[in-house]
Length: 343
Image 1: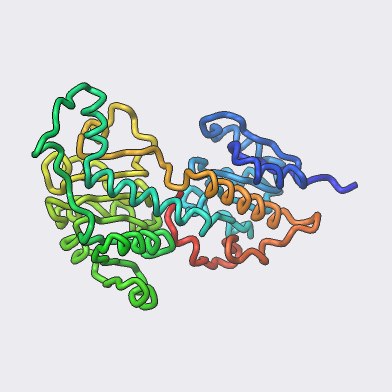
Image 2: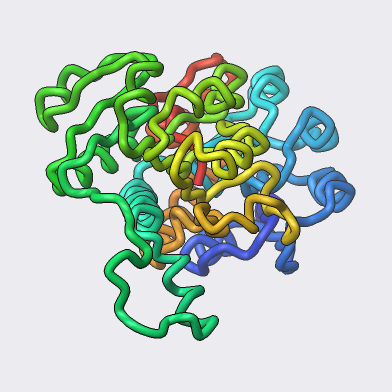
C-alpha cells in the first residue's frame, strides 16, 4: 500500500478543505491561534511533500531549503508576498493561491469601510458607549457624501473592478489607475483612466487594490498624501506596506486628508499603543476582507485542491492542470490572478 504524502498545514482552516486533505494525505496541523514560530515550520517541513500556509507565515529560502522533499506550496490567500518565489522557482516548486473566491467579500468590506469612514460610524459608536449622546445635534458628526462623489481605484484587478462596480451603484464617478489599461472595463462600467497623480488630486475617496511589490511599497507616502484633497478619505484593503503608516499618521493629524479606513496595516497587527489607533478619523479592522463563511470555505477548498494537485498521485490533478490557481514558478510565469492583493 502506497504511503500517504506528508503535508504540513500551518493553521486550522475551514473543515471543508481540511477534510479533503486528510482523505489523501498524512496531515500535520498547527493547532495554535497564533502563527507557528519559524523554528517549528523549519522542523515540520523537513520531510514534507506539501505545505499549506497563510500570509502570516514567512516561507523564505531557508524554509524551502529545509524541505528537500517539498513538491508544492499552497497559499490560503490570493497574495503570495510572504513566499520567496525565486527560491521556489529554483526548485521547480509550484505555488498555489486562491483567486476569485474572495473577490466579492473583500469588495463588500472595502465599501463598508468607505461608508464607515465617510459617515464617521466609529466615532458615533464611541460617543454612544461613552454616554456623550445627549440629544440630536444639527452639527454633530457631519460626514462626507458618498452618492455622486468621485472614487479613485488604484489597481483594477478582480477586487478593484468589484469595488468600481459598487461605486457605480452609488452613482459615483469612478477613476482608476493600473499598470495596464482596461478598455473593456472602461466601457462596461463607465470608468475613466487617470494617471496616479491626477487620480489622487481629484478623488473624494481613494481605494487601494494593488499587490505588494517593490514598486508599490509605500506607494502612498507623504508626496501622494499631500496630493489628495483635504476632504479625501483613503481606504486600504490591499497590503499594509503599500501605505507609509508614519506619513499617514501625520496626514491624519495635520489634516492633509480627512480620514482613513484600513483592513491592513504595517506592521500587522498594530500594537495597541500605536498612534494610528488613537486617531478618531481612522477606522482600523483586523484584516477581515475575506472573512465571510462562504469565502473562507471556498478558499479552503481551493487551497486543498492546489495542495493535492501538487502532491500528485491518488488520482489528483497535477499542478499543470490548475493554471488558473497554481502559479507555475518553475517556468517563471505570472498568472493574472496573482496581481490581486492579499486577503
